[in-house]
Length: 282
Length: 256
Image 1 (cartoon, rainbow over the protein chains, first blue to last red):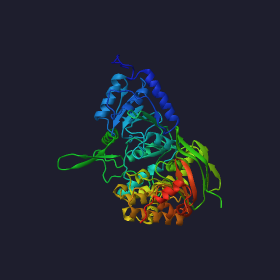
Image 2: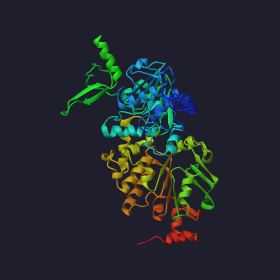
Image 3: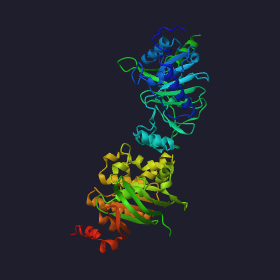
C-alpha cells in the first residue's frame, strides 16, 4: 500500500464522518429503498459530479479493495478518471477497469454488462433521490406519501407519457418499487439496466450528496419497474449491433463520427466491449 | 333513514380568534346542504374542519362509512383520513387551480384519483376520463390538453369531473362558482344539480350567494361571526327569514 498523501486521512474523509456514513448505510440496507438522511460533506468536486457516490465509496474503501469507476459505462471519461485517480492517491488502493476484478464499483448512470457477484458492491451517484419530486415539490408531502405507500401519483407521470408519446417515454431514471414497499429512483441509469437491479447478487448503494440522502438495494431484493397492465415495462432495443465487438445484447451509444452525420453504434460499457474484442482475437 | 354525517358542537379557534363556534348539524345521504354567510363568517373554517382538513378545537364530527360503521373523525390516523378522502369523499375548491394538477393533462387530472385507488389499466382510465369530460361538457378531444389552456369555467368543470370520477359518497364544495361570470355559473350549477341527482351523493356547499342556495339546496345554514344564526329549509329561510342578519342578507340581494 502506498500512502503518498500523509496530509489526508485514509480515503480523504475523517473517521467520524465515515462512521456516520456507515451507520446511515446500515440503516439504508435494513430498510430497502428508504431514503436515509446523512450529513453530506463538502468534497473536492462540484455537486452533480458524484459527491454522494464518492462519500459512500470513501466510507466503504479498505486498503485491500480494488476500485473501478465508470461514467456512462466508460472507464476513460473525465469523471471516471478523476474519481479513480483521487482514490488511488488519497487511499492508495488498487484500481482496475475490469468489472470482474473489482470489489467496489462506483458508477454514474450505468450498471456494467458483466454480471455482478455477491462479493462486489455497486455505488451509484444520484442527482435527485426523490422519484416523486417533479410531481410533488413539497418534501414534507413526499415523505408522507412514502410513509403511507401512497404511490398513485407516480402513475400520473407514466400516464402522461403514454398520452403524449403513445408509449412510456421515460427512458432513464425509470421508477421502481423496491421489495414491494418503497418507490425508489434507480438514479439516471437507462431503463435497459432496470432488470439488472432485480434480485442482484451484489449490494447496491445510492448516494445523493447535494440532497443528503442515502439508500440501498440489498442483494437478492425484488425490484419491480412500474407500468400499466396494458403498457408493460419494456427495455430499449436497437436495430444495430456494436460496430466494434458485434454485441447485440448490450446497451449501445450512438456516436456521430464526422461532420456529414455519419453515425456508429458502440457499446456504452467500454470494459465489456474491449473484453469481447480480445476474446475474438484469441 | 340514518344520517351520513353528524356534527356536534363543533368549534375551531385560531388562537384567541373564533373561526367557528358551537356548530351542530346532520347530513343525510343524497342531501345537499348550503352554508351561507358573508365573507369572514366562518363558512370555510367550518367546511375545512368538518372535512378533517383542520382539527377542531372542541366538538366532534362523525361519519358513517359504506360499511355502516361510524367513524369519529377526530380519532382518525393520518393514513385513515387520507384513505377516506381518497375513497369516499371529494373536495372542490373555490379556485380550480388549487384543486387541479396544472402541469399534467386534463385526462391525467381526471384519472389521478382512479390511479390512487389502484386502477392500472391505461385504456380503461382513458375511457373513463373521456366519459367524464363529456359529462361535464368538455370536448373529449381536449383530453390531452393542459388545464392551463382551459377557461376558468372549464377548469372548474374539470375539477368537478376529477372529484366525482371515483363516485364519492360525500362531497365538500367551497364556493365552486365564485369568481365565474354569471352565465358560466348557471351552467355549472345546472351541471352540479344534475350530477348530484344522478349519483345520489350528499354534499356540503359553502357559498355567499343566496341564489345558489335557492337553486341547489334543500336545507341551508346561515352563519354570522362564526355562529349559526338560522337553519332550516332553504325556501323557508329565504322567503321568511327570522333572524335580523338573515333578513339583511335576503334584502341585500339585487332584484330586477
